[in-house]
Structures are given as C-alpha cells and as structure tokens.
Length: 154
Length: 119
Image 1: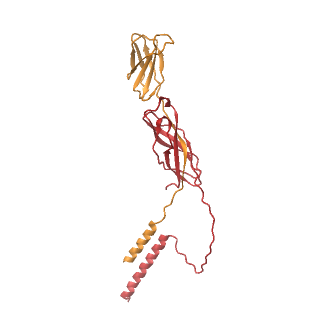
Image 2: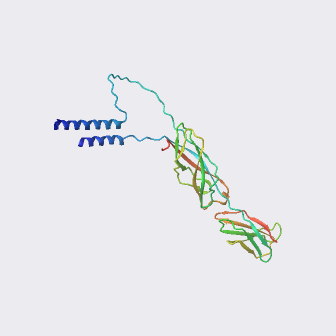
Image 3: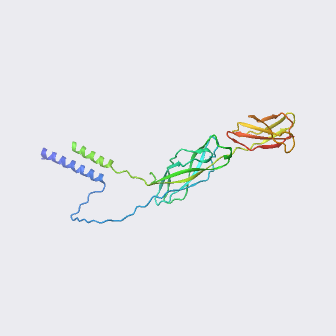
C-alpha cells in the first residue's frame, strides 16, 4: 500500500525527469559528464574565406525582341566563382540603357552550383515609346548589378 | 501544474532565440543584352501610270501611316519633292509619274523607302 504522500512525491519526480529530458533535447548537444576534468587555454587558427563577386556578362537574345512601347527580353549570364552554391538574389538597373530600354529590379532566385560556369538568366525589359528609328535591329546593352548570396534557399 | 508549463515555455524560448544565419552576399556590375526588332519591309505591289497614278502596297504589321514620295518631273535624277500620307494601302498621285517611293511608319519607327517604276 503506497501512501498519498508517496504518490505525490513520485508525480513530482516524474515531472522533473520529463522537464529535464525536454530541455536537454532542446539544447541539442546532450550533456556529457566526466569524472576527471581539466582545462587549458590556447588558440586554434582558422581563416574564413572571402565571398567572390559573380562574373556577369551579356547573353544571346533569341526571342522577345523590343519595339517602341513594348516589352521584350534581356539576357545576362552569371557565373559563380565561389566554392559554395549561391542564389542570384537580385538583378538591378545600373544606369540608363540606350534606346529608352529600362526595367525594375528583379529577384530571380536562380541557383548556381559551386564554381559554376555561366548560367543565362532572362528577364523582361521595356522600350520607351519614343525610341529612335535608329534603334531598329540594334543590340542594346543594359547595365545591371547582379547580387548573389550564399546558399540555395532550400 | 505550473512548473511544467513554465519549464515548457522556457524551452520554447530557447528554441525561438536561435540566431538567424546570415548569407554571404556579393554583387558585381555587368551588362545584359537585349535586341530591338525591325519593322517589316514594305512591298509595293503596283504603280499604274496615268492621271492620276494609282499606287498600291502590302500592309506592314503595326503601321499607322504610309508616306508616298514622287518626283518633281520625270527625269531619272529629279528630286522626290512631292509627298502625301495615308493610312490606306493605296494612294492616288495626281500626276503621271515614272517612279514612286513608299514608307511605312510604326510608332516612332519607319521602314526604309521602297521604290518602284510605274508603267
């Protein structure tokens, strides 16, 4: 026959064990316990790498030609020189383009493997209604700033 | 009953307070490429000489206006000093002429002048 006092004591013990287990799991690292301990001071040396800028060049436009007042395609190729995968987070204007071509910042989210070769990214641009007649058939340079960030966002 | 709840809340706070990971970010300037289209060339289908001279041509996609030029006189080197405009695909030149030129306008763009001899 277990007394009421004993039952209450066991309940509190059980709760304590559960709370301890949950906190231990949350901290994730577990709790090691050693009978003999010692400590010392010193320093390890490591060197973090530096994020390298993407390599940005113009790509070949095969579709989406531009006409006055209309929209079409612009193509940029981006290479990742870094030893880790990256995501192209932004393609932003970097000054005026010829023939009244413009665009708003894009967020393509294109993923590039570590030390990847050039990957073409197509985005939409527009041509001003006032584009000069001399712009017919012209190859148009569109200045951009491409931003990459480590990780693939997965 | 309160203690387990408090402990649970503390654990949740610990989990929620994990530091956010910051991505390494770099940028570089460069140049994207785009390409402008061209207005389709205009084709004159006929120029029947007379008074007037009737000129016909094929439609150019997107064209809102056509400009017709004809010579002042019929010499080979006579200047194309006369002109008229229309949105139609025909034009009646009030003179008997030997040659005619027609151009299509699409917005701010225009085709090159196409020339034909009248007969």
